[in-house]
Image (cartoon, rainbow, N blue to C red):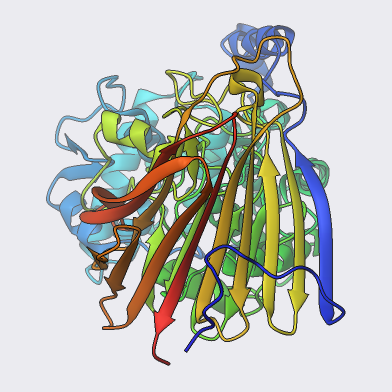
Length: 593
């Protein structure tokens, strides 16, 4: 049995401290994304691509062949491939019939258009056992696309999409270049060289972050596998050398703070790194170094079910994707507990795993869909997800259920959709109508200690200081046997600020329960008994030391890695501050071994 320590009374540091880490993560002074001048410069560059001068720059000899075929690290979906054979391009919940497609339709959602123009459907055809049918369908779609976009188009030739299209075309060249039609074959080879020339200028001007990485990766692969591209490959590699240190943090976290972006970047680097291997060479050390840090950091976010939670706009990552990455990266089975740069922290003991978002929201120039979930936690008991956040959308485009309803997707980004404290039903970081983040959390302080009797994590954020004059702190202690997670959430009056509205505020501390977890209230009204799908029993207790409130069990939902919506429950400690402060203690204690 776990100890009977009062809920939230984590022990103070003692002489038996094994590890001690402290730090402060800042969002960068309220980064609001690219400046007006940066946007103007980018707009001028995009308009320049449609000029006769740029068309003149794109001219050149087309290759007679490719030097090799890189291996695509991501397997296709045969179900999607079969639907393409049947005449339907289905992605992001949208269906487009292939018999009369021009690829110039503007009605499909942006996710569908990026997928279609990036030729990512090639991997779904490549996996089909009927090679002849897959080749026929692929060549027909490629020929239709080439006829639709013989010259620059702002969307179809966007740098990140063009980089992806180059990777797909190179990686699945046997599928689309086996035709005996020399006119078609020459047109495709010429297009590959033309797109590479376009990226010579456009790749470095792509938005910072994953879009630029995709553009540069495609350019590197093209320079490596299209004859005469040595200078191009070197320039692309130099671009990646400048980008990756800022995108992949020292502890392996990704600067966008979305695990789905880390996985996407790892897969992109694996694909591009396979280009030199296809001609008997080796990928530059830059690729191995980034992958060696990305994989353990991603595994550090896994709960006991082998899945990574939905953080900062991204959907959950399923166990199959994590296993695939582990097989392809030498450090793929290593696990990192977190670090001061990534903003995520992992506590684990026995069968219990806790992951905490102890970092500020991502910079606006790198992320367009962050979540306002600072200090949220997820928790598992073995393979059962006990506490979770409600989910995310980015990454669900290939899910059979398609994209979520816009209102639901927007709701998942809110603080209330996370297992953390909310003041006055207000997001800790403001969310604009377009999904980008505005003012709110600027700094998160963090201290962690590992001791003989457990692990202690203390953190705080300033998301409510400017609006309400209140600072939020969270203390977590996981016992050495994993049988108890004790927590304390505090609201404190921040130093007086000119515009802070000093008045009492309602607060809610939410714990969204995992799929299949049932909760029953205890007789005293301040606790609950929870039963996991595996049959284990956990007891939850709450105590409000300052302020006033109650414990409620309310409906909730959870979106899994396939986009399926599960009806669940949530434990909510609701109350009101007193003298602009509150002190809420709580604990999860496992019954039995």
